[in-house]
Structures are given as structure tokens and as C-alpha cells.
Amino acid sequence: MNRDRGSRVSEQGERGAGGRLRAALRRFGAPLLLVLFAFVTVLVHVPQNEQISPIDEFVYSDYLAKIPTEGVVRQGEDTGDYARSLVKCRGVMLYIEPVAAECPVAGDLPDGDFPFGGKTSADIYTPAYFAVTWAVAQPIRWLGVGDLLDAGSYVGFFWLAGALLFLYAASRRMAMPRALALALGLLVAASPAAFWSSTYVSTDAPAMFFGGAILLVTIRLLQGRSGSVVLVVLAVLAVLFKVQNVAVVGFACLALLASGILGMVERRRGLSRAGSAPTAGRTDSTEAAEVTVATATTVSEVRRASPLRFVVLAIVAGVLSILGQAAWIVVRQSISTGPSPDQATGSPLSARALVAEAFKFLGGVPLDPTAAANGAAISFAGMFLWVLTLAGLLALALTARTFGLPWLLAWSAIVISLLLGPLLVLGVSASEGYYFPLPARYGLSLLPAYVLLTGVFLAKRRLVGRFLLALAAPLAVVTLFSS
Image 1 (cartoon, one colour):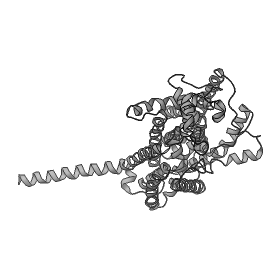
Image 2: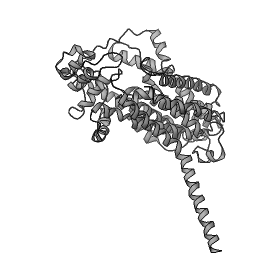
Image 3: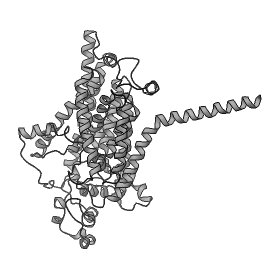
């Protein structure tokens, strides 16, 4: 009898342990898979990148090499021997083939043999990205990756993994099913946007990281949770790492500002127009119980309770991020040694150019920025993600309940996407005296928001997540064999 009782206790313990393991896998399995795929894709692609990236990696490698000795590069400064040796020894993809005979003497060759006449164009950036990359690259070099540029390229894993985790967490806060959140994360990691920003040394690397982090904190705030100080810090850091990350800062500020103004109006009228808390489609009862969403109060009640807080927070985050960049501009000018190199990209600013730039970021952020260098699988992943996010974002904006959280986020993303291009070119034209067509990758910090909002729309159909995962998972695997 005691033996039977002990047997039953043992079985119950095993079932309890097994249940906890299944619960842990259910909760953490998808984010772990995303981190694993980010690790594998960087591990696979970095050694395949024999030539340096045409997206300014020549000047980025120069900045990276000068971090321990100079700390910052100055406007008008010549590139150093390390960056010049990379051009001659490895070549620049699509533009310059390696020249073995000139490799050992690259530092002695005339400036005209190198891009931008041998001068740096990376002086527009603060040392933030390069200092972090150099520091994290050192342990990687101790593990046997001798070349600084290769070690710095592997650092892209941390930015990509962080971006995917933030995106997944934000998706779950919007009650998105796990399968759908996993599928969309895999598509992001398999796209050209991730390839070019995460497997080379690139100032685009932190864009999706900050984009996902600010997106998550913004959703938490609009659902009545804490995070005001975190948002301000992230906004300032995002712009200091790269000024174009002002896109996601603008998105967050616009969403908070609109929510605050709506809260004031609703408070004055004494009625709610936003409906209940966000539930992006149907999920089973177990999933819904695990998803942290604002259920105690509606989104409308949250913003009516503290509308002024949202307005003030939007203004503070926006102003401080701009002031941080303004301070860097003053520092950059004070340490300048001469004019920037002529990149032969300037042209007169026109009304037609402003219109073209207005649609730039809705028209191709996930796509191959070189339009030629990626293999078929990665290019297809980017095209598929672009079509999916564009259609999903517009569909959500037109079908979501007016003034609800999904509606508010969707329209904030659309409006900032349309305004960002013209504002950036007007700023460049005012400060530099010329205009150049903006690359779509300047909107990369908005990609997590595009993806999440697409998922919110797709989650209205129960089986969409599993169907999309069945497409995304094998496609992601195939991209590992297609650079």
C-alpha cells in the first residue's frame, strides 16, 4: 500500500516536472528559436562576406580601427592604413576588385586610389556604435577571430537577437499568437534588411534593436504600464547611435501625443470612444492567460487617467533626442579639420523630390539596398516581407476600431513614414546646401512597427500564424545557403 502511494506521488512529480518543462518551452521556445536563428545566420554569412560591403563599410572600418587610438574621426580626416588595406586586399562588393599586388603597400598609395578620395565620410556619426562594436569585438578576437572587421561583423548577432526579442515581446503584449510572432520574426531575420545590417560592420545594426525596444516600451505605456524614463533614455540613445533612428522616436512621440490629446478630449466629453484593450484576434485560453495586456482598464481609460503625462512625455523624449544630436553637431564642427568629401550624390531639391521621398520608407525598407547583391532566397524574403507589411499596415489602419490602440499605432506609423523623408532631406539641404535621394534603409528603425502591426491584422484569422510559419521557417533555412 505504501509502495502504491509512493508510486502515485512519483508519477505526480514526474507529471508536474513534465508540465513545467512544457510550459517553459511553450513560453520561451519561440524567442529561443529566434535567437538561435540570428546566431546561425550571422555565423554562416560573415565568413562568406569576402569583400567589404558597398554600404560605407570602408569608412566604418576606419572609424572602428581608430576607436582605441583616436576615439572619434573628424570631418575632413584621411582614412588610415587599415581601411585602405581592406579595399586593396578584399575589394568592395559591386565596385572594386581586390588587387593582390597593391595589398601590402595600400597605405603608400595615393588618395585618389580609394573611395571618397581617401577621406572619411563617417564623421557625421558619434562614436557610440563604433565604441560598442569595438569593445564587444575584443572577446571575439580572443576566441580566434583575428581580423578586427570580421570580429566587428559578428557583433551584429547581438543587435539582431535583441531586435527579434523586443519584437517578439511587443507582439505578445498585443496578444499575437506565438506561431505568428515566430513566423514574422524569422522573416525579419531572413530578409536583406537583417543581412546587410547584421553581418557587416554597419551603423544600421542598432536600428531594429532600438526600433523594437522603443516599440515595446511605447505599447507598455499606452497600456498603462511604466516606462517613461526608459523611453526617454532609449530615444536619446537611438538618435545618438544614428540620427536616422529619429524615425522610431517620431513614431513613439506621435502615438503618445495623439493618445494624450484623445484622452483630453474624451475626458472633457466624459465618454470613451476607444473600446477595450487590444486583443489582436483570437487566441486559445491558455495563451490569452499568459499574455500580459491591459485588461483591468481599457486603453481609453488609461489615456483619460493621465493624458497630460503622455503629451509631456512625447515632447520631452522628442526634444531631448534632438538636443542630443544638436550637441553632437556642435562637437563635430568644433573638431573638424576640413570639408567632407564630395560623394557625387548631391542634386537640387525640388517639389517632385519631396514627394518621392515621402513614400520612400513605405516603399521598400526590407528590400536589398544594393538591388543586386543578394541571392534569390534572401531577396524573395525581403520582397515577401515588404508586400506583407505594406498590405498589413494599410489594412489595419483602415479596418481597426477607430481610436483603439492598433488604429492609433498604425496611423502613427503611416504618418511618420510619410513625413520622415521630406523632413530629413529638408534638414540635409538646409545644413549641407544640397539634397541626395535617401536610401530606404534609413527607415529601418520602423520595420519592427510595420511587422508588429501586420501581425495584429493577420491575427484576426486563427490559422494564419501556422500557415505563415510553414512558409517562413523553410524560407529562413534556405536563406542560410544564399547570401
